[in-house]
Image 1 (tube, rainbow, N blue to C red):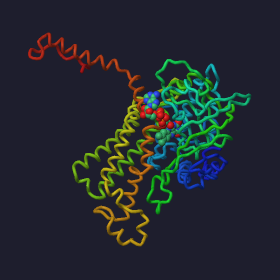
Image 2: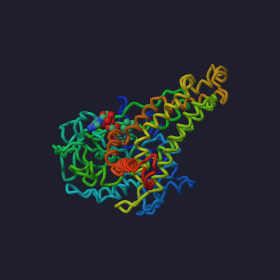
Image 3: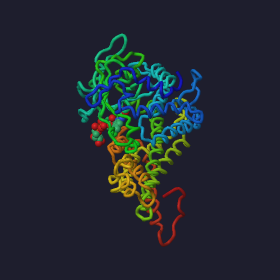
Image 4: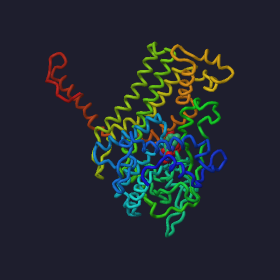
Length: 506
Ligand SMILES: Cc1cc2nc3c(=O)[nH]c(=O)nc-3n(C[C@H](O)[C@H](O)[C@H](O)COP(=O)(O)OP(=O)(O)OC[C@H]3O[C@@H](n4cnc5c(N)ncnc54)[C@H](O)[C@@H]3O)c2cc1C
């Protein structure tokens, strides 16, 4: 089956998956209000692939079947492919204001990169190279949606799992001819309720310890369907106000609450053909460095962030215009700041694509240098964009009623008292409810936390960036400059001239 329709996707979710929320086991995630909004949004994204005006951008011909498949599955063979993939992802991101962390492209690019680097999965402990290639073909040719869990539950973070004994952390408890049996939990599975497959891989973490592994029970990688017997998802409560009087009160949260959950493996059988890594002490290193998937995964993230930061910028501009506060200098400074955040993000994407380079696997990847810079800064910049909207919207964010009031008994008062110099009441209530949803609501809080943590702990990734950055030449330049000045000083500088400046020095 090539690209799926909305209907085919929604039907695929009615498969007796085990999803728990608010003490209930959900019968049908497509009908349950806590998931239905995001399910419809995801379905719409797939349906867009059938739209004739978008098909050239969103799809390409499968190298194996010739069918149309989603562009985010492409294994780029040129810098142009990298750019085309970015353009396709941008269409989905612009449509959803960048608010969906787990639109299908997020995992698609990662799995495509792993499959391109399949040789990295040929390990002494297990040969997962064909399995990862087959899995990639399966998700590409069937347009499957994926969630993933990379992190062990928060039990004891003082030491890595392989130096602990825990009944909580997902682990191999048995091996049979058919596969391995996994028991325990992993976090956080965003989109778990709405995905077709769950990918369970090691986090790309580095532990600063020389202690040897006490166990390899936790060292594995695999993927299985989300309705596999024994697999259950326990989800957080929704961040959308499902009892809102009008859908216009939660224009983002009612459509984009993609859900998060913990995956519990209750003696789940994972067939050997679905295993990618097995009892591998270097499993984390394989994912971190050997597959080169990082720049591909973060390519999707930076494209998403361009749409998201542009949306937040546009919202701040509209709020400021609605009451003409944009005439004040310090407001203009804040607006310039949010514009700069959007432009910085766009520049990082453009630079990363412009400097796309060939990888050891024969594919092309965007330049990690620009993506790392973006990654290290964006979560803080995004917080700032929320803060700017809150600062400019001020009391108006909590001082406007539900959009439903425009049809209520107080309609006349509402039409009169909620207008502003540049917007009638209807326009201003819609705008301020959107701003509330984007920057102040529980949906907004979850978005901020998402940006901070979805690709791991920024403290540790930034420390890793510092450690891997090539620093010596920069430090040498400082010392060369000082030695140079000292030499000039010995020859009478600054008052009696001295040798000419050396080009390229500070
Ligand atoms: C909304 C959201 C959605 C997410 N979705 C997914 C998903 O779909 N799939 C997925 O796999 N992951 C997902 N994640 C990311 C992931 O689950 C973690 O949040 C992330 O890797 C950070 O780990 P943690 O939350 O366990 O924090 P912890 O590791 O417990 O860290 C908490 C704090 O303690 C500090 N700390 C802990 N251990 C150390 C250490 N060894 N050294 C230094 N400092 C330390 C950290 O700096 C941090 O400040 C999501 C996260 C969020 C917030």
